[in-house]
Length: 101
Image (tube, rainbow, N blue to C red; front, side, top):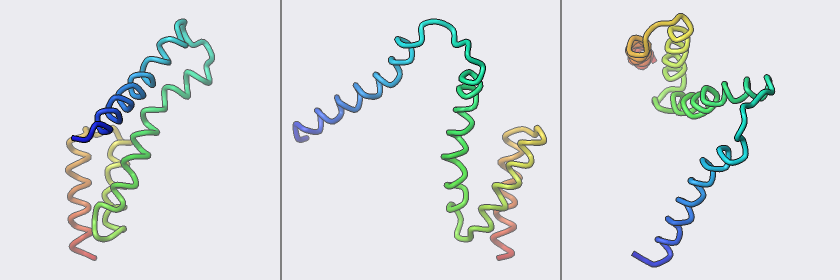
């Protein structure tokens, strides 16, 4: 491997470690601001949604079949069904939509 590859790997490792370490260093005491705590509470959900929704819409040959699966999964998650059930029902919805389109 070229020598620069190891340099790039080391820089990426340092940046990744710094991103995880900085909040621990800067935020030593409990966060009391209610709005900021609420923001931090929803960050994982927003990140997961931002990664999942676009991928679900382009994962199938037809946009509408991906949308059908996404809507079924979202509805079942909202209703409190299990992850396994929601995933199976969404897969079935995509399969049916693909057959109809």
